[in-house]
Length: 133
Image (cartoon, rainbow, N blue to C red; front, side, top):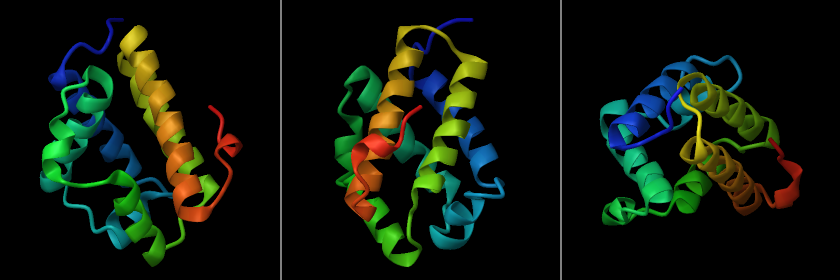
């Protein structure tokens, strides 16, 4: 299996992740009923986010968004809990593991745990060390 190499690989991961997450019985409603996520709008933005995280492109910055604030707005509509982030990580890591292996894939795994911890701490005040994957 090859490593994540470019934006096309990130886009593949994002499409696969959201195809699973949006129908997931535990977290799907957060995307469909709370966030009312429009994938045509969201996928380019989230692709820029992960591309910036992984390859340091800086493309996410052009959206003028802060992912912590975006998730806090969602948290105000529907409290985001540890179990939501745990499930998000399960799906995200499964998609990575099924498609890629290598240093960049491992970096995505590590940064996803960091982001889940950071968002949970920011939104719900849960100490960062509570989520481990």
